[in-house]
Image (cartoon, rainbow, N blue to C red; front, side, top):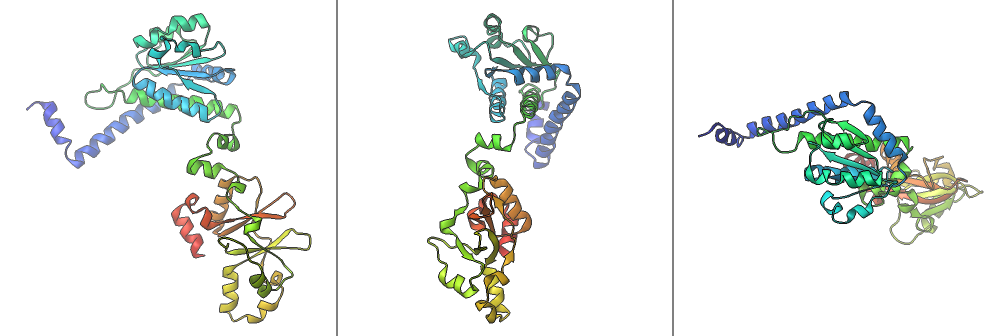
Length: 345
């Protein structure tokens, strides 16, 4: 049996599988560390071109490099830099019409000699489009034609064969992330900007505004702080699922306190029946935690998780209640262990 065949048999062992997997990850990790130290002024020049781009950043590459390019393009787009991908083969069959002189080309090729990529270079030179190259060799054909070259250097591909693109694609991806995120920071791209591009999914929910998730005022229990506890619970009714709290307002309509079902339970447990016929303002939680209308949902969720509260009033700029965030409506946005703690409080 050949040494290679014997090695393949050995990897069927869980212990050997873990050893081999760790070796692969460590190989790629070392290359990333070396790359971070080797970054120089060319990286800064590339960022300057991305920041100044008035058109789109067009990302291209062949094979695995092209797939990495798609992820880099997506990261650029989601962090404030308009971008799209261009397949090098489709490009020379008409899709070069997508390229405008205001664009910037970002080309990925470890060898810098990929035939399909090199065929683009004469046309790009004719268009006068800046070329940013991410490649392994600064003396390659691609690097010599590029406006800016970020050299990855000589890399050891992971695995016993050392052939499958692994370390090279990992380093390309890391450079792409660095370019996108540094450029994004230069643009002062903030959470609200990020939220506009991520309206869906769990991330989109966290980055959305509180008014998109709160229960509107007509679905909340709201009463005057001068009413008695008994009057509030007998007379204040709302359609749909009831919240676990009543928001109390002062004579000017501003939020002055909150009284929860748990507060009521404590009065009964301690046989404080007389308090049921006293103004609720005397037993409410005064100046409760609130969140301002227009705040980001992630801030509201963080506050609820950190302070272990089940209901969070939403107020306008004048302090008047406009809605309520109930824990039961946002459980999916709070880590399960923290949500359980809140519900048990």
